[in-house]
Image 1 (cartoon, rainbow, N blue to C red):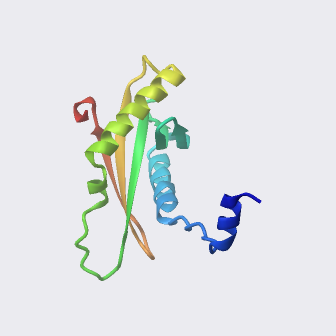
Image 2: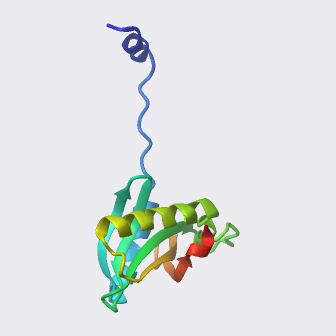
Image 3: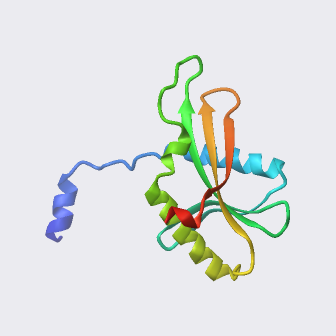
Length: 145
């Protein structure tokens, strides 16, 4: 037995942290919101070198490709909520990453001649009841470099 295995055997097992279900829930809510508005979901959680795109959609015009970043925040009913809204999580680094990933997707899919837009969907999800959804079209643009 090598030294690394011997040392690892003496350490307590660490359980992997369970993933917060809010992220996937927010993405499901956003996808449902978009489908109701006649968008077609092309991909979900699309992994590209360097990151992941939450939703890739086809706009109802059947031509425009819409990349959707979903930001969700948990809210408590009856409590004054003072935390920043989910939109505040779309910081400059994330904007640059979304632009880079989108350019990579355009090249790999051959969507050079298609209109492309990057939207943000903010979801405020209470433990019970209906979530509040805000759709910000063209939330990220080339000017965000």
